[in-house]
Amino acid sequence: MTQRGRATRPTAPAGRSRRTDGPRGGDRAGASRGDLAARRDRLRAVIEPVVAGAGYDLEDVSVSRAGRRHVVRVIVDADGGINLDAVAVVSRAVSAALDAAEESGGDIVAGEYQLEVSSPGVDRPLTLPRHWRRNAGRLVKVTVRAGEPAVDRQVTGRVTAADDERVVLETESGPVEHRYAELGPGRVQVEFHRLDEADEIDEVGDDTDEDDDDDVEDEER
Image (cartoon, rainbow, N blue to C red; front, side):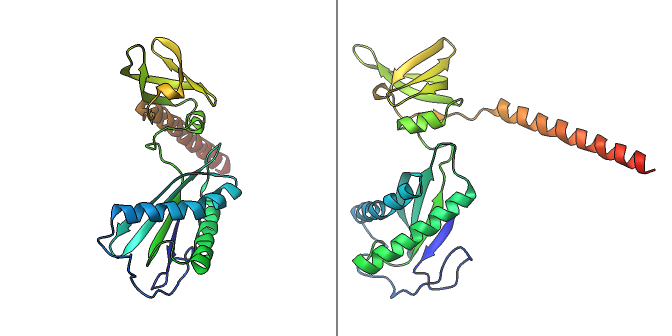
C-alpha cells in the first residue's frame, strides 16, 4: 500500500495531495547515512505506537533516497498474517500520524516522501521468536553455533514447534531443538515440489469444472 507525503501533484485515491516548500537543508542528494539513520529512528518513534495500537507488530522501518524524494518502507505483520485490507488501514493510520507529528514537531522526513506499507515477504530473515512461530510448518535453513569450542554449521529443517525460548526443527536426522541464542537469522526455503502439487490440485479442479459444464449442456439438450 503506497501513500505519498507532501506530494506536489495529485496521487492515486489512496494518497493525498499536499503542498511542499521544496527541498530543505537536510534534504539533499548527498544526505549521509547518519542522517537516514536519524530519520529512521524518528519515524519508528511515531509509527510503532500506531501499528501496535492497530494490533500488529512493526517488523521494520527503512528510509532511502529515490531521486528527489525519500521512500519510507514500513513492514507490519501479525499472527495469522495480514491481508491487503488491513495493510490499507494501517497505511492510512501511519500517514495521518506522520502528518500530525510534522505539524506539531517539525520535519520527520524532510521534503517530499513516499510511504509504502506491506507485509513481510518469504525472504525476510527469522530473527525473533514470533518469526519462527509464524513460520511453523515451513522449511528453514539456519546457521547454528554450538559445542565447545563453538562451531558454526548449517541446519535445514521444518519448523514443528516454537516458543519464546527455543525452536524445534524436523531434520533428516530427526527432530532437533535449539535455543534462539544458538541461531543466526533463519531463511525460509522455497519448496518447488509444493508449488507443483498446488498446480496439480488446480488442474484437477479445472477438469472437474469442465465435466460439470458438459453435464449441464447435455441436460439442456
